[in-house]
Image (cartoon, rainbow, N blue to C red; front, top):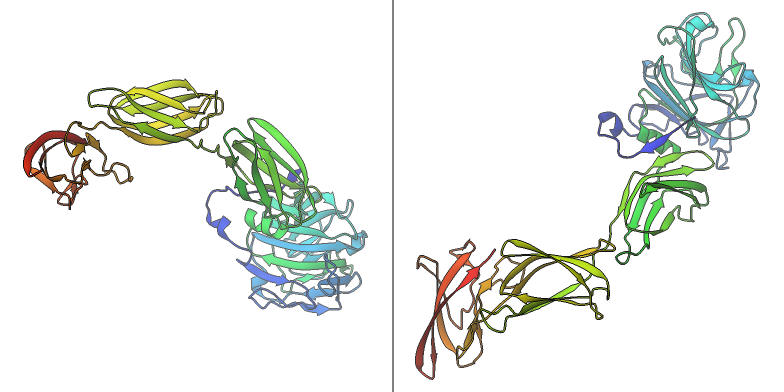
Length: 510
């Protein structure tokens, strides 16, 4: 058995970009008339058929043929007699299983002539059949080409039929989403049309005998001069399942993620399968009033090959892959500076860990990657000790049991020159625009500090002058960012009208 599977990750191609109106020759909705609902104006001419309830029970919204002499003619124009490929779609309810009542349409009807494309059923089995004639005045197998499905007609129930004829050896008939395969027969030549118009409701299959007439109802009859695409078929079948929402787990290691599947029919039953961690899971579900179903209790990971099957029709939709990300750890970080320059008693404290859990911490300092294996204390903290001054980059914390991570970024452990009467100086700054330590400036410790700072490059070029009114430097010169390097400075300051000078250097790091 073949099942139509609508796959949404098809490669791009012009054939997949067409919508249902492209190359549509006619569309009879049969809402109380036989007018063409396409833009072509190919209205049908009704000969005796009446209007009946459609598949939803709406009155006068489908057309009924009595099996005696009712039919609807197409306009007799060349546009309705195209070369292959061609496609059809319609809803049908057979009222009779009698072979004389099963001839549905012919695109070029002519008594006693095997011509046009016609849809009926195999005489012996009642299986659905699509055929075309080569124009001969004969109905033997050498004058036609046929494709007979492996499924027999079902009376007194509505069924959707989609037909695609690409060539003599490439025909398909979908019955309610199902392509059950079939067999080819007949050795007729190319498709030929007569000078007469096509019609719905009658076809001639016996030389010298009158035409046969369809008995039953038809609705939403469409006719195209092209092959329908996979997306077209999905739209016609009403298969538009999709993943409308996905939520990650609320915390690292939990299993409360969700996947919401939408586009289902409210109250209908479906089977959902997917692969997670190499295991195939199967769910039997019922769509809610909004046509949705929420798969709950999901851990982080890849949910692959999500396949939704409507149990009654067999319609399927392959929704592909959904990835539920592991939420990051939500940690905090703080640092303490050195008590004096030249010491190595700086610290970095990482908080909000899980007490007793083991973690791996990595960071980069002075271009060297350091790795620590640690266990959080009873308060959920860990203190990295014995740190010298400088920049500690790319601090990454990984919880070993779950693999959850948190990138804490950059932390600067500083030392300040001490013993100066009214200010302290920073040894490093990082003007990278992250809002952290973006400027170099004096740390003023006395309101009576009056100063001027001259900043130089290594060659003695004056780059910036600072004062209490213009008190910080962003690492630029004439609008250009200066490179990572050591820079020198001279502080001229005055306390109680006595002048002093202080010289040192700092590092700019980007």
